[in-house]
Length: 211
Image 1 (cartoon, rainbow, N blue to C red):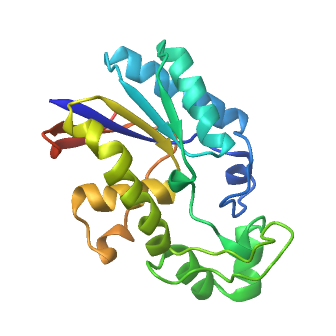
Image 2: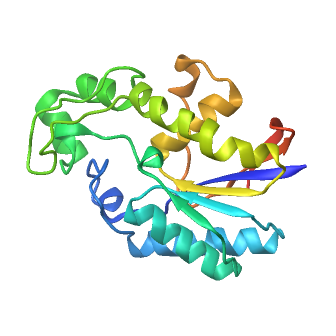
């Protein structure tokens, strides 16, 4: 048996400010730093050890990994890749969620945030100069192939793997690992700074739980 542990980064400064973040490279809030350290503490307490670490290329995930691993005493080989980045929120990036709902209506913002295949507007803005935007479906289209190509081979070798990433990139991985439908994944929320453990055997999930 081996472990695959998914860890959503601690609260970011823009989580605190209730802003759409996406690919904007903001740092952790003080609470987020504490959440990351607490994750490392509980992993150490429960005697988890890892062979490899995977993170996105965004600061809030990297810092969470660094803080958690520092507390736990891990010194792991790490691979960082944009395939594990948060969903790109397009023209909404940087906007306050409450103000956006007041402008476009609660129903429309709910569709952008929680639908499976409807991306936010892709207008070019200062925080979205390339006019990019992703739905959860688009996010899954990069995270799942990356997992299959780069991470799953180690899982099949019974390596213990830690992945530190983001709410939507991890939701798409959970969708794959748990065989969720696109309707079921919409109800899924992954808390910040709380390790989600998959106990694996030959690449198959035996059980899952939060620490």
